[in-house]
Image (cartoon, rainbow, N blue to C red; front, side, top):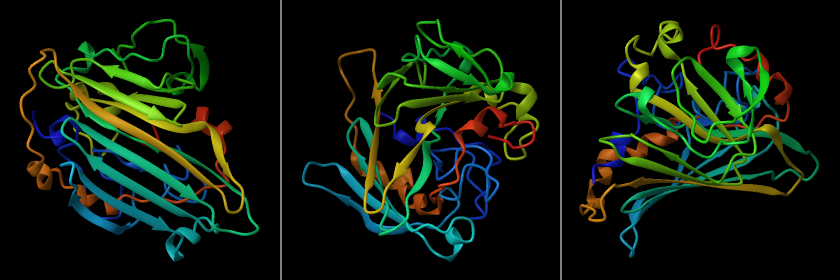
Length: 296
């Protein structure tokens, strides 16, 4: 099996200056999805510096585990004054990558609300040949049509134009075909009722500074999250959600995967993603998100 990093897309022009989100991988959207009057688009979690709670460590099972955390500090309070603690636990298995996320409100008095999303960029040979399951019958907000709401009637979603949709109450499992070398990617999600599908296509790829004009055919974002309705945490309460990415093969004989390849996955770069909580998130503003002025 190829290292998992080959399944995740990163633009050739991605910037690693610690000041802006990396265009690729799995940016952590929190506490705001979309434009935010109090801080950067998609919140500050993907540009904040996380604390390494547990360095990548091989478990007795052969899996590799790492844990990161983010708490309120001067940086987050400059945009949002609530206390919070965010934990991000990653487990790399032979054919899977597990994401376990926890949000805790340590305040004794204040309630806050937020949105949460894993903005996963998948690498594909040709997005026009991909099919995505798990959205049939679901309502979705189409940001390319000024936030109009439609119902998905297709059994599988295909992409042949600029796509920016927030699907609501989707199935817990999505299958993406033709990810790498004809393989399939299985996404399992828990407590993430929404799924965002995004591709800027040719016309909007040109408007994104850190996105190559010719890169749109080789990526698709399928993003598990909770954005249509905010997460509301009372004092002393917590929220948990998880996602599993699994590579599926067409043959029954699977090549042996060496987890020793983990150092090349560069999991240690994750602390540079940034996170915070946004009680002021307004899901009603989602339809007004315009990628033409604020790239996804």
